[in-house]
Length: 333
Figure 1 (cartoon, rainbow, N blue to C red):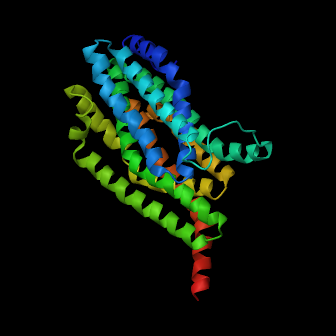
Figure 2: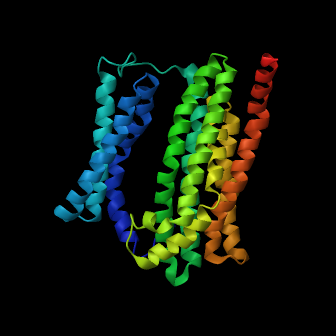
Figure 3: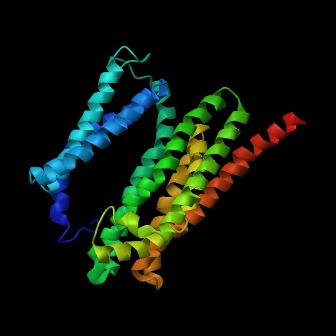
């Protein structure tokens, strides 16, 4: 159903059976870490992420090679690192350091609708990303022919590289969202506007530099993940298509972050769905069938980034940011 074949399916099943054990720990670490950051302990929150990552990196070679556990070792290393991060979060929130500690509490039903509206954006993004990836794998398998496994491998590498390339922008927008929300509540629109500008410009700068690297010297980056010449060659070609509009992601993230931070859940939810459900998925199904073949799957991402990001940012600018800029100009006069 998700594009697995005879070669990859046994590994996927073996990995998943162990990996699913870490579902609750990862929900604890990722879900409760914001409670640490929000209380003024960003270093502790960062340590949560670093702890899991470093432990995973250290345990992977130990379990995979030393204990000869193969794919099961990789899954076990991931689960143990997730458990360590979860215990770290629980320990800190139970300590005396944070003002708001983890203890018995009652759910305030009046706050639930607002929380669900704001949380729906992230939830929708995750769900739609999973749906899109499933469609992508199916199309790669269907149109890739004898090279379908290689194309799926190339897409997996591209997704891994994209995650790394997105980290700087994600970090800035995550921090900027908190700053914008705080100043929006304090009615300091000039600071909100300055934060939007900083998120946008820093994102454009970093994303453009990374985009240039992927266009000019993609091979050294891809070799970090594999030494297969055929897979490297295919990933270089497909990656240049896939990342063709990567700088535009700065527009998407700055626009969507602003909608969430300024309590515009409907707009945030819509633009979360726009790129993945309304654009990527239909284009992924359409382009391979109108002459582009398997490469149409990669062109679908390019076009969705270009169109979706432009619409998202333009809407944010004309409905929110332009008004703030006009208000600032009026005050200066």
